[in-house]
Amino acid sequence: MSQPLSRRTMLRGAGLAIGLPLLESMTPVARSVFAATGPPSSQDETPVRMACVFFPNGAIMSDWKPTGSGDDWQLSPTLKPLEAFKSKINVISGLAHDNGRAHKDGAGDHARGGSTFLTAARPVKTSSNIKLGISVDQVAANQLVGKTTLPSIELGLVGSRNAGSCDSGYGCAYSSNVSWRSESQPMPKEVNPRMAFERMFNRGSDAARKERDFYRKSILDVVAEDAKRIMKNVGRSDQRKLDEYFSSIRDIESQIERSEQADRAAMPDLEVPFGRVEAFREHARLMYDIMAVGFQTDTTRVATLMLDSAGGSRRYSEIDIKEGHHQLSHHRNQEDQVEKLKRIDHYLVEQFEYFLKRLDSIQEGTGTLLDQSLVLYGSGLSDGNRHRHEDLPIVLAGGAGGKIRTGRYIEPKTERPMANLFLSMLDCMGTPAESIGDSTGRLEELA
Image (cartoon, rainbow, N blue to C red; front, side, top):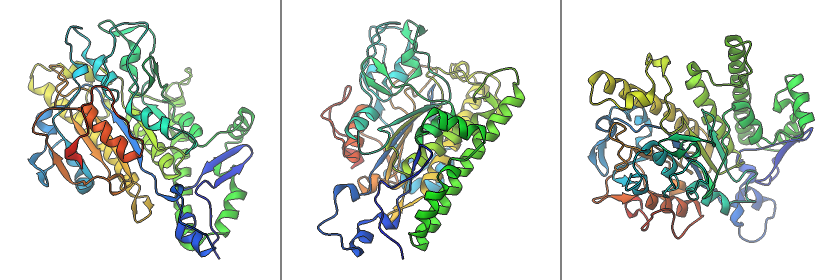
């Protein structure tokens, strides 16, 4: 017979603790069978999660923007990979970051595009004594402290450079980070999948970690006895859900191990933790997997992922593009370069679709983890050739537990600050704010 479990139940072993997905045994209904008294607490409510994914250098907007409007619309060629999730996304046009525009500061649009992406704040043009503002993810995370193991997790595919100048007099921190704890402190992002994975699952002491590494143990091997105990005390439906969860954990570990082996074989004389250019797809998908598991276990409710730094020049050789992304973005309307950029845009959306599929495959409550999330995907520039900071390419996936209506192409009649969307997202997270960046109110069209 199944027994009730706390939502905070962890599997433990040798200094390691990993969370569990939401099980039927953890719901208020299950606990009521075991003589729970009074109404369920707020902790019993299924939480909303927020993920923010940044890509650099804007997009070819003619192939990005959908046709039609409102509920009667069609996905564009670039967004076509999201067709299966059309009913669970909103594509939003007409949003701008005015603080990304030059005004009197001159060049440096990539640094401003990256730094304003989640802050909507004006970066002070300097390579030292940087000053910006808190980002939307950290506004939410600050109000969720104590409710999850990690208030937030920050991930990337390229390491941060927080010293020196990277874009026309702007400090490298502006280009390297989208998550900011305060006006002068960016949140360090993790680019090594193994380190991100172990951070997510509380790797325990260094000694315990080294022992696991030495014997090549899965974290599931370490908590095996506790897992067996849990499996015996839950119903068949929960057992199936746990089997799926454990399989996903082992799959992530196996992918990390295969990627590290490939890196060691390719560069035997270098200490490279991960990240060959050719491994972009695998690297990105591993990070998406890690975010999904973090949300599934309620280890964290807030995550950010930078696919590259602002102005990044990754060469997407896996789709036969040899030029750097930034170089191509200054295409001057040359047809061959525009076509390559369209392929990059489409390729990045394909990886994003993988994340949505992963979230939507995880059942939670009466829906899926995607239904219970808000996933922002976009760039701090629209037209990378002209460095435009208005009409940004934005997709907002997930319904925030029914708090927003999805399946729409939203076009405000007048330009709106991107920060207004942030305020609406924070409301959905249950972490409201009076203002952020240059906000002027909520994005009413989202309701």
